[in-house]
Length: 354
Ligand SMILES: Cc1cc2nc3c(=O)[nH]c(=O)nc-3n(C[C@H](O)[C@H](O)[C@H](O)COP(=O)(O)OP(=O)(O)OC[C@H]3O[C@@H](n4cnc5c(N)ncnc54)[C@H](O)[C@@H]3O)c2cc1C
Image (cartoon, rainbow, N blue to C red):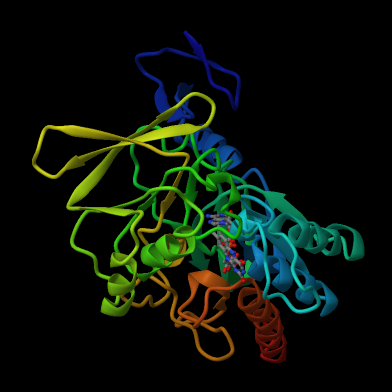
């Protein structure tokens, strides 16, 4: 016999209705009990807000601070506070500072979020957004549920990963994504760059007076502009591996070598390196909302000049959008703009009696 978790009645295993939840089987005497159980489990909270912001990078944090200043009922849900900006070692383009590191700037953003205006927020991943009559239901990975009249999507983007062995382990311990400001740790050491576009070749250019030998590894023939290809071709310390795939990263505590293989060949080459810089493109984090809003061919959310999207009540800001320029200052200013636009949307709803 089993116990129905709702009415606490004993039920026989053979006759009971069942459901699986979080890997465990539950037994019920009736559909009513089963429905109540699922409702309780999946609707742990249904807290309502005028505005829910998803994503706490520069765009989402700025939107949250602006929305609070505009006296909106705002809630921020984000996997982390800071987003990609935390990885920037030296930001030279943010007004008010000659230069500042990403972590320092994010500390200041967080101070505004938490101390200057306490803004209700949750560190969690949003897994689902469903449109309902008068707004949206948002479900997090813990199955908490929230209601919002309007949404700001500021989920940014993720640099594409190679998805090979050792890549996660050596992240920031020799494996980096894109350009970094301070290459001093590879001074006089060997380094590799993965990718064949302009970004990859720009990194080669930046490394050429710093690193000993530079290995440029690309799956296909280089796709960068001919001018930059011609320029790097003159570098005596550059060795190109075109048509090669990265197989594995190895080392003790920090990276010491990268293994590569020519496509369709067996032989593996081990290159001894202190740093590898991967520049194989970006992926906008738009899949969460792709069922509602229009995306461009790169998967970015198409926005209007007020950050509205093709779906009423959904606004978007920062790197996840098709706005030109992927920069902290641009993401922040788009975040401010989107809060103003979301407030206007709420005022219009109120005028219509919503
Ligand atoms: C290594 C590096 C160096 C850089 N250097 C500079 C620089 O020097 N100067 C400069 O101006 N720019 C720099 N940039 C670019 C800059 O960091 C980005 O343009 C900026 O962070 C974009 O802000 P964003 O808020 O749009 O997105 P992001 O910073 O990407 O933030 C997105 C946020 O959304 C969250 N999120 C995503 N999906 C979900 C979900 N489903 N649920 C909940 N939360 C979610 C993420 O966890 C993150 O917190 C750099 C980027 C990198 C990677």
